[in-house]
Length: 396
Ligand code: SF4
Image 1 (cartoon, rainbow, N blue to C red):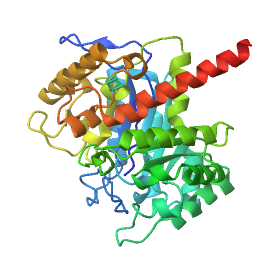
Image 2 (image 1 turned 45 degrees about the horizontal axis):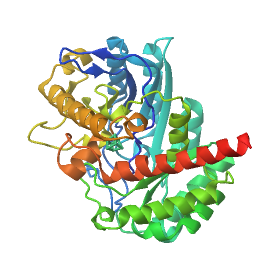
Image 3 (image 1 turned 90 degrees about the vertical axis):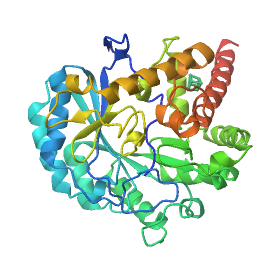
Image 4 (image 1 turned 120 degrees about the vertical axis):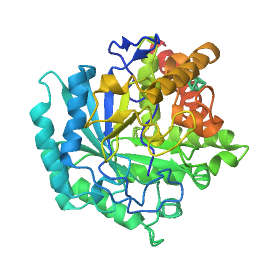
């Protein structure tokens, strides 16, 4: 499974509400539904703890999950429904058709519901393209660059390479005129190949590429992070990759969102994954967690199984009173406060990714991580230099 969330994506601008702990909650910007925890691949860096489980979500559970959000009246007017946290194309297409019929019936007229799906694309065929077109689902493909990098990590369960199948899927999407984004995981080997990776994505033609440095997250401990010089190597990679992209050949997700943040006039951002009730996750059985999809399926002495409640038996307001939600809210908010007090990048970040803090520090009450250094601080520094140069060029 490729980690999809970037802490600066979906920065929250709508008003929040406050609970009796004095912590502001929501608004709910994104709901992540897990059609299945199962994945047909066995990537070497995968963080999914339950990827052998073949359970499937029922369409009624999907609709009930959305009902709970709408019932709470705490969703943003622009709500993202993300099908994720397992390989979503393992589930029959009819699941999505029926779930969409039910969801359409209950979606308030003032809510704009955007559907997205991140896939390894090995099963993506014309029938799936029909589903994406019919239901308006935006597609993200996980591909790590040229075959020699991708196939070193992304295998089938039998250990076979998957690059050729993913390339065929991308060609099919192009042939059908369906735009797609890409998420690429950068492993240690990738950092020496900025040119090859740039050439590959310039030829592939996605609308945007998200770069995820392989990181400690949820149940996965990064191999990359074991290297002492990883940040310098990543900085060198990013500088070379970015300079190659300056002709517009590849849009890099991290730079696009950072430039928006810098150019938005100094408004302080909140990270959706660090915002209590900003992002909700519902597993295939209907159990609700939040903050980061990477926490789903984990266990922890303070937070049990990270589950707040079940959509069949509880409202969201009842779930937000649960012991687990309150403990998570307290500790994640303390981590955000520590970031606010110590980090000069806070206004562009909002307090980072709780799952990375837990993965790297063993606690949410921490600040800087390799993840935020790579994806926030380095990118902010480079984007600021770019913008300064552009401003100088226009003023001369
Ligand atoms: S320390 Fe990292 S996570 Fe915290 S605000 Fe700064 S950049 Fe963000």
